[in-house]
Length: 463
Image (tube, rainbow, N blue to C red; front, side):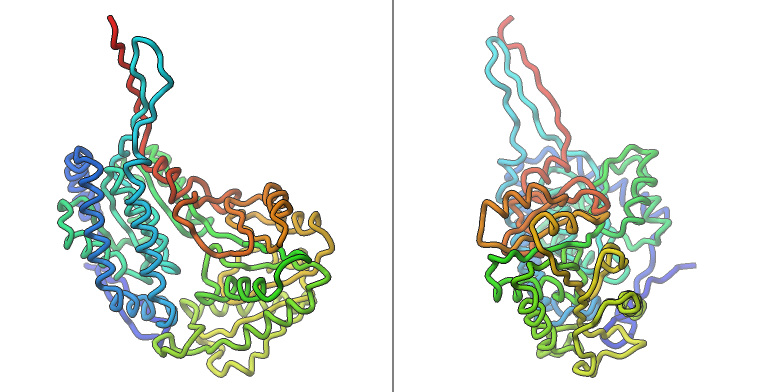
């Protein structure tokens, strides 16, 4: 009996997509085809792989309007914002392709008379990519495009919430003429996903998701010794020093907290503000939140859409209510947002003050449009609080003093430190986390190193 996967749209609660789930036979067939295609693909010149993948990016971008609308229906981002994901996909894909030959070039050892010594970067084989729904293309492209450019085959398992994203990848690769079987996608149950990752033909797993999901990846890959790259979320902090440009900090951090309905691993969840700016900063963030238009993401005037599902909205409502019971105050007037209703995924933004680290909200991961703001009296206090977390994905420091930003950044336990910006991935820089935010990295030259293995050549040239 075929088991169907159903995608419930947060827009209106309707079934937007139905797809059959693959089983053991389909997994085996995909891996068999991938292994066969990968051998020939790895023997192509990097320039030829890049040429074909560039054609795939062109084909993908040509469908931008349809892709953006599908994003809004599948996970709820406003149609006014969804096209930015296609632009981000293109930026990252083109950067990784433009730098592929340089990043994958052999490392030549210092001269030694009579010898030619070098380290080549060779593909791993088959890479399994498990992608989430919140940024369904931006998370997947970080692994899919560079894995293929490096000479690997890819099997993509996308979220049940965003299955059409996997199919869009496949259509673009088919249009570009990539070898059959080199890229495939599978709609899988949790157990079948574990079986895919455990298969000894899989050399590497790229996973973006929860901490528990990351632990499941480690358990699944233990028997076959596949390596894994894990991006597992965050509780990302920001610090607004007394010398920060206040209006810029307000606009940047409010957007970093509320964009995509706060459903971003590197979104801002807690903000520490110097005494001198605290009151004005809080006032500005509340005004920013009040300006949102909450409603159907298909409406072009909407600037804040629903969260992904009602259960997620209820979880966030519960977090906020618990924090208020513990002494916090919520400053956003819920009556301003008629669409925000219990029992729906439509959720108003929220700003919490009078918070402290005894409250779970300031330390546990949250995934919605709510942010906590605390007053601090020194850099040292800000650093201590910013590091008081089990997560370490990104942090942001708003200051006009570059030396202070460098000093504070060196003390912060995160994979990325921003100055005067937040919530952004630069494809030239390694995207990585520490602590419960994961291990390994994507993007940049370092990202290519995760998708290849070193192979040393030691040639004696004089006998």
